[in-house]
Image (cartoon, rainbow, N blue to C red):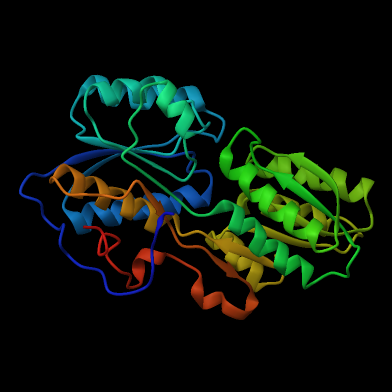
Length: 320
C-alpha cells in the first residue's frame, strides 16, 4: 500500500536546508497543460524548500530520445544531487538511470512509473514511486458514465500511448467497470496523448458507431480533441477524461465534458522534491506514495485547481 496524501496543514521542516541541493526534474511535453501544472509544483518546491531545480521537458509527448539526452547531459555536467523523472515511455530513460544509480544519485519516479521488474533488470534503484491510482481514476469515470446513460448502451475508449502504464491502467479501470455495469465497449483506439489524433479517432468512432452514448478519453488534452469531434457530429455523446487541467475544468463548466478526474500534478512534483530533500538529509522515505485524485463535475468545480495552493499534511508525518 502507498502512503496517501490527505488534507491538513503543511509544515516547513525542510525549508532552507544547510546545503542548497540541486535536483534535476524531467517531465513530458509542456504542450500538455498537465505538465505545465506539474512544472508549477516544481517551481513552488524550489521556493518553499530552498532547493535549485534544473527543469527539462520535451517538445512533444513522443520525444523519448530528446528526453533521454536531457538526462544524459545532466549526468555529464554532474551538478545535480538527485533526479525526479517522468519518462515518455516506461523504460525509455533506463540507460541513463542505470548510470545515475551507479553514481549514487537518488531517483524519484513520478506519474508514468517504470516497472519494478524493468528497473531491477537494468540495475536501477528507484528511491520512491509517486503516482495517482490510474485504475481508480478509470473506475471513477465509469461510475459517472453508468449513472448518465441507460444500461446496455454502447460506449467507446480513446487510449493514450498503449505502451504507457498510466494509459493501460486508466483504460482497464474504465472498461472493466462499465462492462460489469452492463454497458458495451464497442470501440477503442489509441491517440498517443495527441489532441489532433484524438479528434481523428473520435470522428471515426462517431461515424462508425452512431449509437455510442459515451467516450472515455485517457487524458484531458485528447479529450478536448474528442469534444471538437463531437461538436461536428450529429451523435449526442458524453465525454469523460482524466487529469483535471484548467482547459478541461473550463470544458466541464460549460457542459462540453461531463467530468474529469483531477490528479494534481503540482502536488506530485512538490512531494517528489520533498522526498529527495529528506533523503539527502539522511531521513527515511516511503517506497511508494499515492497522490490524490478527485472526480470533478459541474457539482464540485471549486475542488479543481492547483492542489499545492491549499493546505495539506506533510506527507512524511507518519513515516518513522
